[in-house]
Image (tube, rainbow, N blue to C red):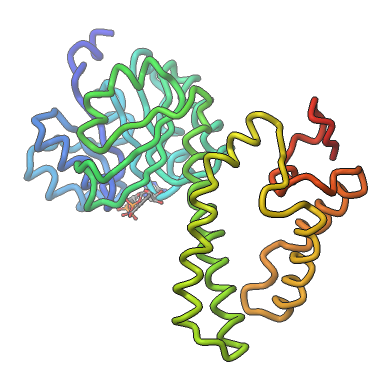
Length: 298
Ligand SMILES: NC(=O)c1ccc[n+]([C@@H]2O[C@H](COP(=O)([O-])OP(=O)(O)OC[C@H]3O[C@@H](n4cnc5c(N)ncnc54)[C@H](OP(=O)(O)O)[C@@H]3O)[C@@H](O)[C@H]2O)c1
């Protein structure tokens, strides 16, 4: 604990690439005591010129800091760096700031707990240029006390948002938000591909596509509320009506560059629900729990 007291306000930045470099610069600009380590040591030179202390090893950096930020390519790099730590890091906080899966976050949290430290996982909804601005959001999950303890420092980097005590929560948010974007964007690309193939005016179609995408945006809160209440009203169409359209779409998309978007699995799910007597339910019923009070079964 003597060492921790001596370096109680020090922050270690492990990995000084695009994100790590921006984070370290922001912390230095705010007057923090920053220690840096990078696998390719020469890449810390600019930060050292700006006032950062260079460390010889991950171990030296992390054991001298109250807060360690692992701003690395991925969780393979995170595990490699964590494997270098063997000292008791009680009272310290370690944050993995990289894109990863929920399973990887759980693994990192276990390793950090074994070192006696608190773990936070971070989902970066930002780019290096936006670090230090209100336009950046970083999602955190894991130890709530650690988040609260370091909140003021984290607020220097972005709008910090705590999304849950499960270590993997930030990764789930981060990945599913990416997934939402991919689903919408790839849906648009599939549509443009199909209309161009059919000789339809793509620009004119795109204007109408904006309105169609707007319907999804506008209905998002009501859809979440249906899920929370386990109530699945038909809305614009029943499952029986959706099935007809989904089958037509599978035929239309046959042979398209981006495939069918997983619609055969959707059709199979709707067919199963119709067989169970839910033909009049709405589309949200397709993600109803497989068993539950609502009576919908898998
Ligand atoms: N850049 C963005 O716009 C952005 C946006 C959102 C999320 N992210 C996420 O943020 C994370 C960092 O991205 P970045 O853009 O900063 O990447 P980057 O510029 O490529 O930097 C990666 C850093 O990781 C280090 N590294 C890689 N493998 C390592 C290993 N095995 N052991 C030790 N150090 C290792 C690199 O060291 P060397 O210098 O030695 O190679 C470098 O410091 C990634 O998970 C990325 O997906 C980035």
